[in-house]
Image (cartoon, rainbow, N blue to C red; front, top):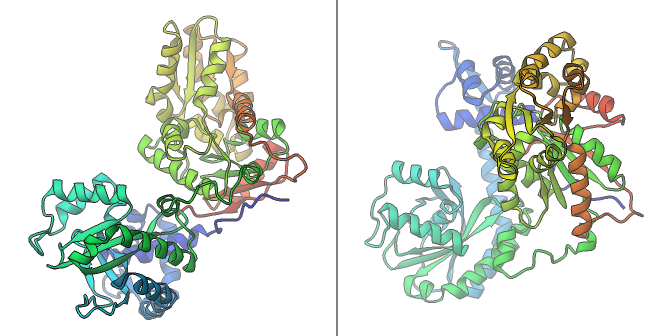
Length: 551
C-alpha cells in the first residue's frame, strides 16, 4: 500500500511565467516593452523576450510597429468569449444547488466572484416573494457595503485593508453605510471571526444580505454565496439562514471540484479527524523541505534512521537562495510550502533549512498546530552545548540567519557564559548550495573563502562551530581541511533525525512496517537535471524530481 502523494497537480514554471505576462497586460491596460515586463515580473530579460515572442507568434500578443511595444492580441479576445461560456458552465453546475437553497429559505440567492475591488454577480435564483430583490447578472458592486464583498475583504491582511479603505471611494449608499475606518474595520473583523458577513441595509434601504465564502482546497476564497431580501426577514432569521448557506456552500464547493474548506467543516461541527483516523494518518508521508538541495544533508540521516517511512521532499529551487532575502519574505515561503505539504497529507513537517527555520518555524507551528513541525535551530543548539569546553562557539550561516540573533539569544538564555561569534558566508554557501565542486566551482576558491570566514574565529579560541546551514555538509571536506581539528563542527542533521523518530513514536505516527514506502521529490524551478544529478551523487540513490507550482 502506497501513501497518496498525488493530491496536488504538477505544473510547469514556463507556462506560469507566460500567463503572468498576460496578467501584467490585463492589469496595466496599455502597451508594454520587454524591458518593463522583465522588471515587473523579475524575469531574466532573455527569458522575458523569448516568452513574449512565443506569445506573439501564437496570437496572444501583438507588436506595435512604431513603438515596438506589445499589446494583447486577437487570441485574448477569443479567450474572453470562451470565458463567458466557462462561467455559464459554472453557473449551470451551481443552478440546482441555488434552486434548492431558495426552496429552503424562500429568499433571493446570489453567487458572486471578485473582480479587483468589486464583486460581479454570476449566478442568481429568485424567491416567490411579491417584493423581490432584483440583482442583475454581470453587474458589479462595491466590496465595503455588500455581504458578498465583505466575505472577500475578511480574507485580506491589515495592510491590504488599509490600502483598500484609503484608495477606494467610500461613499454613503444609505444612512447605514459604514464610512469610517473604525466602523469598517470592526465589521470586517467580525465577519472574519463569525465566518459570514452581513449587509445591514448598507447598499440599499430596506434590503439586507447574509453571505458566506466558497473556498478551494487551500482555503482560498474563490466565490461568495448570499441570501438577500427584506431587512426584517433576513436579519430576523440570520442564524437559520447562515446554517443553510453553509450547507449549500459545502455542496457547491464539492460540485465545482474544489473540496470542502476546513473552516466550513469547523463551523458545521465536522470533526477534523472524521474520515482520517490515526491508523490512516500514520501511514502518510513525512514532509521535508529546503530552498534547494541542502536539505539532502537532513534527508540522508532520516532515511538511515527511518527506512520504512514514506517521505516527500520539496526543494524551492526557483526562489533560492533564501539567505540574502528579508525574513518576512522567507516566512511567506515557509507558510506556502507548509500549506503544500499539508495538502499532500504530510503527517509531520521538517524545515530542513536554518534560514527558513529562523524565519518561519514558529509561525508554521501556530498555523498547523495539529501537525508536528521540526526546525533546525533547537537541534543545533543542543549539539553545541554538549561539546563546547571553552564556551566560545561560532555560528556559520547565511546573513539572514546570523543577523536574526536567534542562535545568540538561545545560547545566552541557556548559558550566559557562552560567547557567540556569528559568521555569515554568503559566497561560500551559494557555491555549496549549487553543488560545490560537482557544479564546477574551484576547490581553491572555496578553501580561500572558508579560511576568510573560519580562521579569525579559531584565533579567538572557538572550540565548537555550529554549521547553521544545511548546505555545509555538501562541502564538509573543504571545511574539515580549513578547521584542521582545531574545533569540533556540529551538524544538526543527525539530531533532527532523532527528534523526528521520537515525535513519531510519541504521537503514534510510526508507519506500519508491513506497508511499502515511497520517496518522492518535487522542486519549484526548472533545474530538474541538476537536482537529480546532485541527489544521486550525494544520497547514492536514483531520484527523479517533478517540477510543481506552489501558486
